[in-house]
Length: 459
Image (cartoon, rainbow, N blue to C red; front, side, top):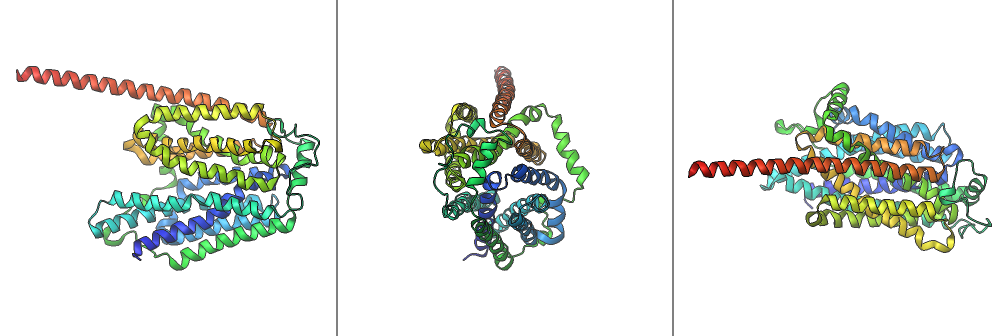
């Protein structure tokens, strides 16, 4: 096997093993660690630490120890989070959440750098365009990586099915306190969650599988991934510029002078809000409260599979419909589902709805992820690094806020907040598109005038 392809496969399957564990554990936090909102608090801490670490850690680590060992060290940070869940408390999960958050940014930066450098070197070797090979490498990586959402959630559901109360939550006379009516410190909901919590040996079994999966990822990368010299033959990669912490912050903040970036902040934060709601609130207040924790995995599989398929579909469809149509399609879908969440009283007899709504949410999320990234790349072509730094910053801020208020507000209030953020975000996004169309019209008019004047001069 070609050495370059072997390395890409090692990185891809390493991430698959690692995020099979983390993705499955993330989906369960709001249901598994409910005491004083410990689970969602840990997720909020993770994304908060991720914001800070992304500002300065990646270039420092990659420069000092290289891409391979940065990936290995960062993967070890993820394993600590699984270990912290064995004895879940504020003294174990919060510190390991900070460690994971600080490891997250270097992990993704090192992966992107490794794939980019490998692709460019292979392209130079075979005489092809570097961007074509790099695109193929990233396509292969995400093809393998995206399935982690399926495997991680499938493992949790299969293990938790063995619990003695794996049937519907029939112990309650009604389910009126599930769904939008779920509020903090609600006695009925708290009792529901306690009664549905799996036996300790099943929790330890799941955490053991997840920890083992993370350890396998570390061993795979440590033994089979080739280290690459980023500075070979005078080569210098953009991702490892020696910039100080202050320089990175100033560059990111300077980009906020662009009015378009400021207008896009709410719709960018919406991406974090909507993902945070599904993982933190829908899984706990709708699925676990009504069906049991063993159904969380199956529901999230439905979301992940739909998301992956629609990401590919809408990426191609945008060539024919344009991004504006897709943005409003996603907004209309989310608004319809939010209204349904407000009106729906979840009950085990309506089991199909528990899967239909995440599927629709996954379809909309696929549009937000593909089209928002594309929008940033198109609008800020001359300042991509600062633009995408802002994208990561504001999306992560959305996660932090969504998980941060999760334990203090009723689900109905959270849904109204989602609705408000989406409406404001889409309104300001429409202003950006209007401004861009107006600018394009002026440029076309100026071009026509110049062409007309040139023809007159020729005559």
